[in-house]
Image 1 (cartoon, one colour):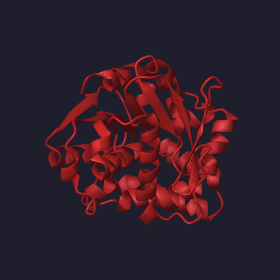
Image 2: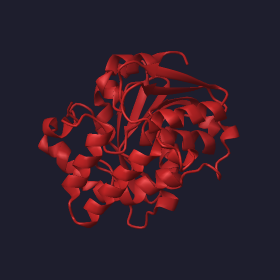
Image 3: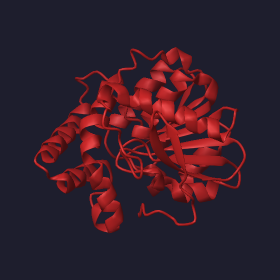
Image 4: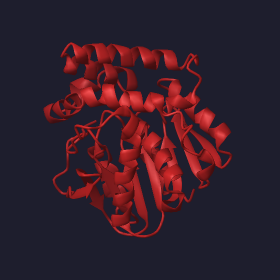
Length: 277
């Protein structure tokens, strides 16, 4: 399961929010935005880009602190989500004037939800895969305990300068424990390089996003909440909570899938992305 970039897909640059964002683009047709998980980058979607390009204009950005997009020095957990939405709106403008289908995986699903709440006119519909909007859950929810424990362990390792150990711990929890051994060296270095931002900016932003300042009533588009029936329980708890808050949402379970289902269950994922919604 390699995240190494494909040389055939160009990686243009978008200047927005006083920063440069790298993204991949392929195809033409209705706009489709793919937002990657927290320990990945837009390269996660290259296999999907190739499959979707004949029918869609697909863009897959490297989010702040991931891949080829650096995290600005003045970024904080309190500003990350809002500033990232600013970049995503600029990217959607490049794709055209019409609303887009927005697909978010894990951390990307949190951003997709923020985008739809901030600019509902730009979002045609949402596919939220294994969402990690943990701020929507009661802090005492037992599903959060193992997630919080992993985050605490990873922060301690980062503070000790053990960036690789922190990354391995994170991947062991959220994906296949043996994934690290199969990743090419370039992929390992890229993921390790984002450890500090992941655990001291991205992680706190996700846990702190209660959506109290975002009116979820503004999210009126169709939504598919996609989870596996394996892997950590917290995303399923988030999907259940979102299903209760958003009556237009549809719950979908992919049997046998865990948190990395867009990669491990690629064909089922593509069918969900391309279905009418």
